[in-house]
Image 1 (spheres, rainbow, N blue to C red):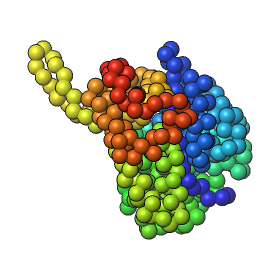
Image 2: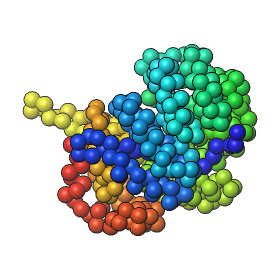
Image 3: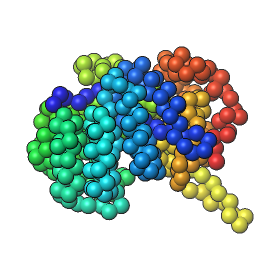
Image 4: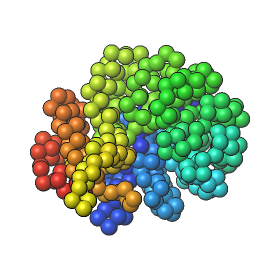
Amino acid sequence: MKKWQGVFTALVTPFNGKGEIDYHRLEKNLEFQISQGVTGVVPVGTTGESPTLKWPEHIHLIKKVIEVVNGRGLVIAGTGSNSTEEATENSIKAVENGANAVLLVGGYYNKPSSEQLRRYYYELVADAVRQENPEAVVIPYIIPGRTSCQFFPIDLAILAENCPNVVAVKEATGDLNNMAEIRRLLGPEFSILSGDDNLTTPMIASATITGNGVISVMNNLVPKAIVEMVDAFLAGDNKTGQGLDTKLTPLFNLITAKVCVTRTFQGRLYQTEEKFPNPCAIKTMMAGLGIDSGLMRGPLGLVSASTVNLLRHALQQVWGNNPEILEPLEGFYGINIAERLNDEKSWQALAA
């Protein structure tokens, strides 16, 4: 199997005012991604709000993405679950419909051990996918911050040895030492894809990790710049790659938005630190710029006013210092970014 590398977009799932999947907007967003040179797209992952999509919606959305992409890029279908049976069934359906790969998060809430994840989840799903299509790839998704369980490098190495269709991993532990251990155990041919936008540069530039690319959230907004950044690093042009990373840092730092929020209860003020998780930030920024509704399915919803201000300020900073990062949005979506960023009423409407 060829090496998996490059930039893959962790797609948002757009919703209309009724909370239904907006397939017209989805198709528009896909055409934008393809026009900007992405390697592929990842529908119905964390960014696509997979936990709140019913499985028929899940499968239909994946099928629609495959139809629209139509061979112009790779499609990695998010089919992971905390049920092996469910993940197996839906991975097979995705591959039947033409997905090039499946992305498997696993173990959330039931918290299996690393060995249990390998034996009773990844190996079983990988075997079923291989029987359906020997060319389809299985990509474990390691994100203990969401699953509360860790899939260790040694078990990933055993898995890849036992299952020839496991040739890549989405690594979102936030631990560069863990990534280096994956590289040491699995060798140069195995692909390590960053699951954290802000760690893409240290992953790829590291001599002990030599990462191969990213499954990016911020790619929904600025795919061209991220493609150019990753391509530069993969070509050995670290200076260009680092320069682009610096320009993108204000956005990369806001995949999860952290703010202090004050509430009033019975006449007293209470202050808490809130963390608004992905895709709250990216959907709010897209809505502010006029390319998404900003709606999410509960329990996610509108963010605080201070969070909206934080996100808007980051976009203003990038637009003021490096407008070329955001300019591709104007031509494709027919928007005026300066006007959108200065439209106070539209941004206020995005706050809870």
